[in-house]
Image (cartoon, rainbow, N blue to C red; front, top):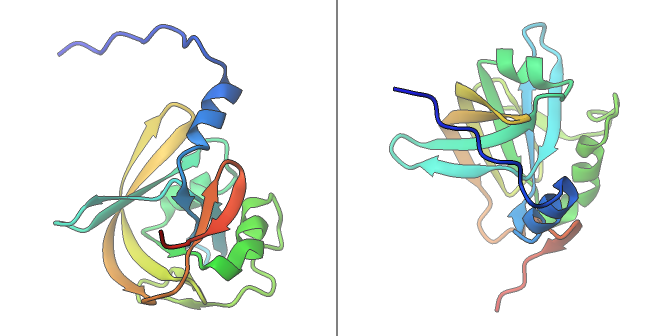
Length: 169
C-alpha cells in the first residue's frame, strides 16, 4: 500500500483556520494524570470527543510542543473532567503556562489514581489506549474504565474565543 499524496498548501492562513474552528462550540475539560514519580499534571482542553460506545472510547488532542506531552505519553491512566459553568477561572488557570495550576484546586484521586477535579459535571477515567501523531498534535484515545456525572449541572462552554453556559431553546 502506498502512502497518501501530500495535500497542496491551503488557500487560507492559520489564523483564518483557527477563527473558523472557533465557530464550533465545545465543552471545556481539564485532562489530568500522574507522572511515574507521582507528580500531578493537568491542562485545559476543548478537543474532547466520544469515539465509541462499545468499547467505551473517548479522544482528546494535545500540542506536540506541550511541556506536558511526555507525561501524558507515559501515563497508563488519565482523567477527563468536564467543567461546570462556575469553573471558568479553573479553565483559565489550567490553560496558562503556570507552575501553580494545582494550588488551591480541589481534586481527589479517581479509581485509576488519576486526579478528578471536584465540582465538574462529569468525569471519565481512562486507560491510555493509543496515541497518534497527526500534524502538530498528538491524538490520545482513552478506554473509559469509570465515569460519573451530575445530572442537571450546567456545563462550561467555549465558542468564538469566549466562555458561555447553556440556555435551553
